[in-house]
Length: 64
Image 1 (cartoon, rainbow, N blue to C red):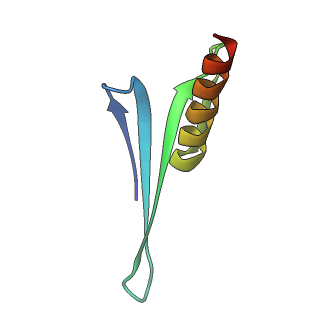
Image 2 (tube, one colour):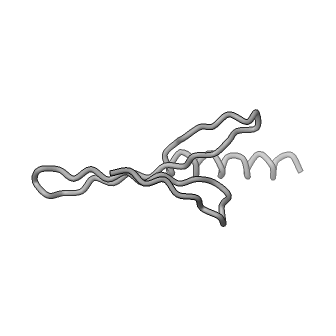
């Protein structure tokens, strides 16, 4: 099952995917959809997105 929804606070789309296995466990993954600086849509897992945002913040601090 996959859900896509708009996160108004972060101004991006979130995707949540759930896999229900035969042994009744649930595998869950979360991703982010947004547009890059050129207007292209891309999707990445939340962990990758958070790491990328942290790296951007570090670069901005270094440039100041």
